Length: 126
Ligand SMILES: [Cu+2]
Image 1: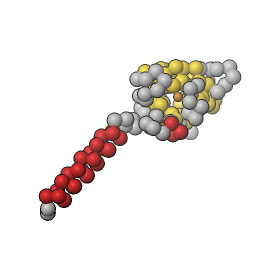
Image 2: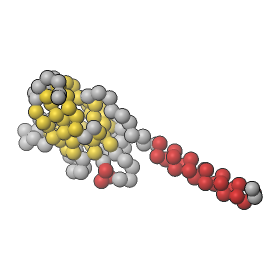
Image 3: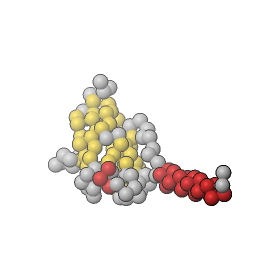
Image 4: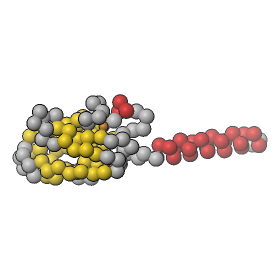
């Protein structure tokens, strides 16, 4: 192997490592049970959402909303009566207890493309 090739391969490896590190900087974290996380892939605001996008829980469950992203988001009920309107700063969590069964759609008050649903079942969800 020539010295020039060795340098090229080393440069490629360094570049690959840098790319891998950049992607690892904002990992997609797995939500815990009864938890919804803001999903905010860097530089792709059209893909920003909540994960899981639909969460099914039994009535009476307290759901935790988590923002590991870099932006401020809200978790705002679509219902005109605004059952909930939660502000989520970076690295903050907030909880809401869903007492009654029903399907509760919500959105981010800042980013209209972000929507999610909490499905609340009377007893365990089938
Ligand atoms: Cu948002």
